[in-house]
Image (cartoon, rainbow, N blue to C red):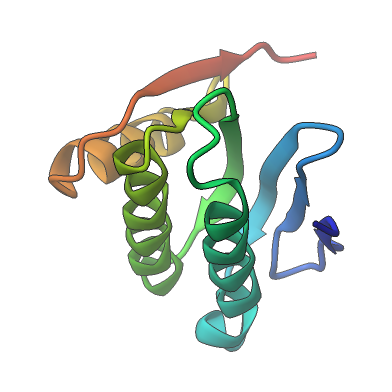
Length: 133
């Protein structure tokens, strides 16, 4: 399956979904003008990838979410993204999500915790502090 790569802009995050390199990453600012249009290819890619690897229980996915800012509309799409990842789990595929936040950004730290705890979708996740440089 071909990788999905979307370059970051001032208002939208970088996306890398590369199963060959085993890199699954969304990083940056999520405040796109049209959130649905931005996240639709990501959701579609994940659903297609799930269909491709279903039944291959040796497969795994580790998604790194590393946001500097997430607007409320994007947040709703992240809940949908978690639902898709739950489908991976339900298919017997190992899933880990890393919510990465900068050391001094408690708002992003707690946004990640809320995303996973309040969504009522149970998937393995870790909140990871990125040290300041």
